[in-house]
Length: 169
Figure 1 (cartoon, rainbow, N blue to C red):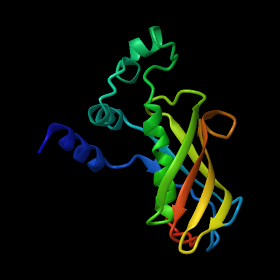
Figure 2 (figure 1 turned 135 degrees about the vertical axis):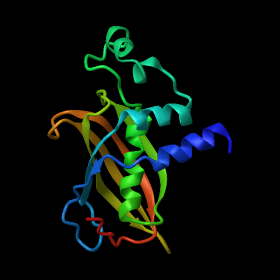
Figure 3 (figure 1 turned 180 degrees about the vertical axis):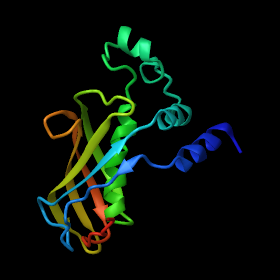
């Protein structure tokens, strides 16, 4: 097995440090419905992402460098794209077979290794096609206890096979 494949397998084998909180979901998705999840990224997950992505920027790997050179007061930061990967994961968890078609992202504030984030997707519009549904979602990630500390802001388009929400509680 190639080294990057071993790292990918190792990353997927890491138990998720996740505490799920999902709104009481109606049986069918409608505009303004929101799904959310709380999550922390561990040292091991960040290291695995470094191995898979090749992004060896020291702000992700070295606390002193992140503080002194990067200006990140609490040390190492999680890769923005690793945090953003929670958006399609959350959608697919509730809509198996969903295809993530588009994503815009604005990285507003850092997410530190070990810091809890709240990831949220909100249905903004739903368009039915002959066999599927095109859904535009607002995508937001917050740090800390509430929605006052925005870390990532964006929008996504996903193609859903159904509007039936799968309950993952």
